[in-house]
Image 1 (tube, one colour):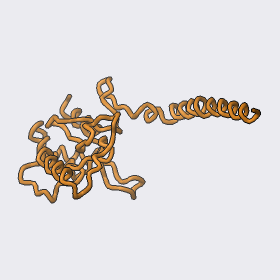
Image 2 (cartoon, rainbow, N blue to C red):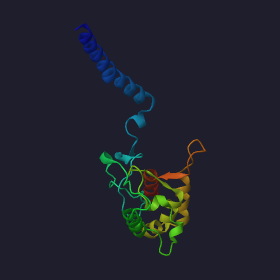
Image 3 (cartoon, rainbow, N blue to C red):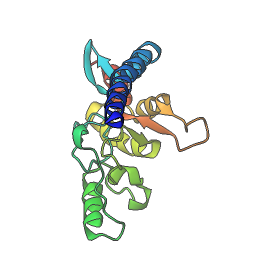
Image 4 (tube, rainbow, N blue to C red):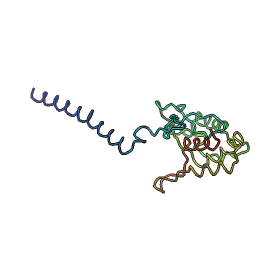
Length: 188
């Protein structure tokens, strides 16, 4: 019976310590040291929150840059990929449909379309696209906005994020930040 009471006390102490005190301390420290990140990396425009720079959103406006396709329809509460293998006919059909709806200029060779433009990300919520993806969207955006392609290319270059620590990954651009810069340039 002694061991039973000892086990119960041990469980209560550690439940309070690890279930209450530790999370409160970590949350407090993160709010002090990293307030933007601790609150979800929420982005504001004109005084209102427009989203998180870490989570993709559904964008279909031809005047804006589009995110990667999403297997979960950009639902942050159910992130995940399609888990379709490279030889699965459903994946091939999905990619073919994504190529048609990607918004690239007619006559663009399929070989020049980057995979991130037509394949869903693993989470379905990837906020970044490749520079090549962004550049292929420029003719559509230029036509819809009247902005020159060279000014849009400069905008992409200004928002380019290099590889992590300068060595891992490839250059990408955060679509949320890029679209906010684009809207600012359009005066919206």
